[in-house]
Length: 308
Image (cartoon, rainbow, N blue to C red):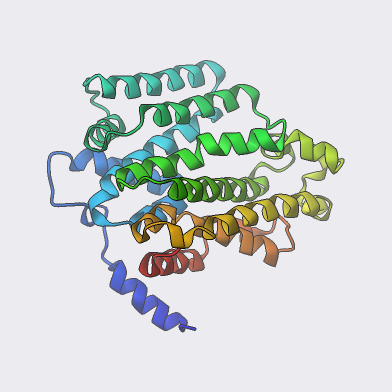
């Protein structure tokens, strides 16, 4: 077992303390502006994704951050008013279509995304799936069943990993299986983490109606002082997430080592599930919302060992 001092020394050797946005990219070109903007967006709105992408190989970081920035922008739309959300979803669909028609938009994320699409021949369907899944969820604002929840994760978290695998130019049935399980595990873990942010006002947003009915829970149960009443449903979902991680890791001998970099997001799910266990599945425990230093160490270990 490495000491904390040894871990920090290893981390410093991998990511220098004077690391900056620009140092994460290839030599400066005319494209550095849009990509630097993408990385700042990811850092602001998806810190866990930012950490994972920061440990991926340098040659693909610009492309990966363009996908993560696109996804981060889409994830923010549901909080807008109805008319604004509709316009924003249509805007990003137009951006995707335009990229495949050779049109250029003078918007940083659009520029970076268009360059990535052309360079790596990304799937137009998957990019549009990201937009459509967010749009449909924005209209319903509820998961009716566990299956609906998993389908949403398939169109969002899983699809992001599929796109990253395209950037790495990795194809294969087993890598697709791993992406599917890792993406869903991250989706479930992030959902559980968000309970503490939504509270009773958003319980119906993040917990499937099917489970609320099964455990006879209402929005009134989702309060810090009544956390023990919802721990059973939190544990139920956490176990499902853990099962996805276990299944993903059962394919570790069947996927190329390089593919493991696309699955670094598994550390996000691991970290959240570990904290939930430590907190007796109380999603309101302050530790759940705190950024864990262990997450960085776990990502680094996976990157160096070629695991996930």
